[in-house]
Image (cartoon, rainbow, N blue to C red; front, top):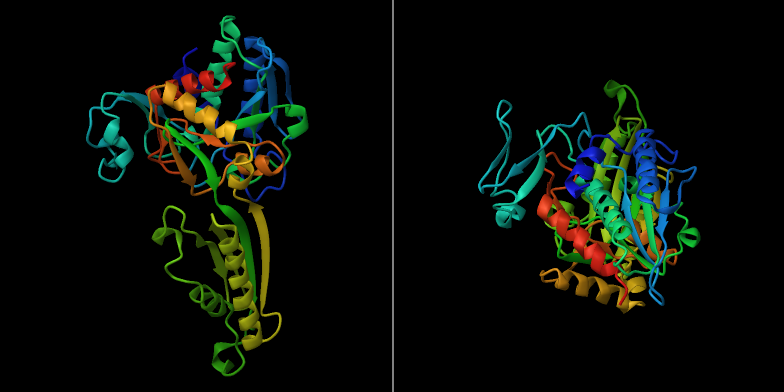
Length: 402
């Protein structure tokens, strides 16, 4: 089966994860994809295929070459809740350049000037939606590429490789994808997630990440008799936000620059709540960002009374760079594979996170590779068929015995 055929099958299942749900997986639809993958893996001939009680899917291809490392390939099954995940209408088009009309009746157009990734896609086949939902290429493109690679490895006995360990995870989009991953049972010496963008890119530097929740306690009283008595929690919450650097928000940062991102703000006079994500590649600066929030909360509690501001900080994941650099051969293997496929390797920082970050800190060094998909978490998401095919070739070279 061609990689695009698999991809179209997988994206037909809406696997949007749900941060509000504490279960794993956080959405029942992820079980549907997990069972589909389990069935396909068994039909292809993978060994020890299983889906555990938390919806993690595992399978293995035994080694047919001696002294070759056991290499893991991992992708996640869930999709972002940033925009609807379905019902989804996808189609393949040959890109002729210029703007791409997704829905003429609704005037939904992917404009070339807004999406520079289209610049080198002329003459290639793109998979797009009608502009009303996600495509789901993040990360079903990675899932499809791994499965297509597995089919090749199992149907070409002349292809020599060590043990190949395959894993598909739930709930990556809500930061829990690797939390319950069975690293010991997986048995890989090292691994790669296929969860990125351009086919020539490898990522082994990601943000350090934390979540912050600020609960603001006000005092409500009739506004007609409020003088020197009312304490408006909404205004106090706005004061907290105003004390964070205005130029250190996502819309003003790039590259290695960190940020504070206000994701939710709700409230009324009596009580308000702020939620942030905190990000920085540099661990020291990351810790300083958390300390800044603590200092602001302490200052405002002194100003308005102890307990007016309740701050909760929770680390999500850390920069995998320091772990990956302990095994430089993992980077070299991917770089050489990308170069062997005629591409110029590019190591770029991830302005986000990946299962590989958590896995690297759990003892499984796991940098991230591209998938040939773009504009994730939005209705203009698309996947390039030719780049997906290239990612299958890169996987072959990575897993090949030396």
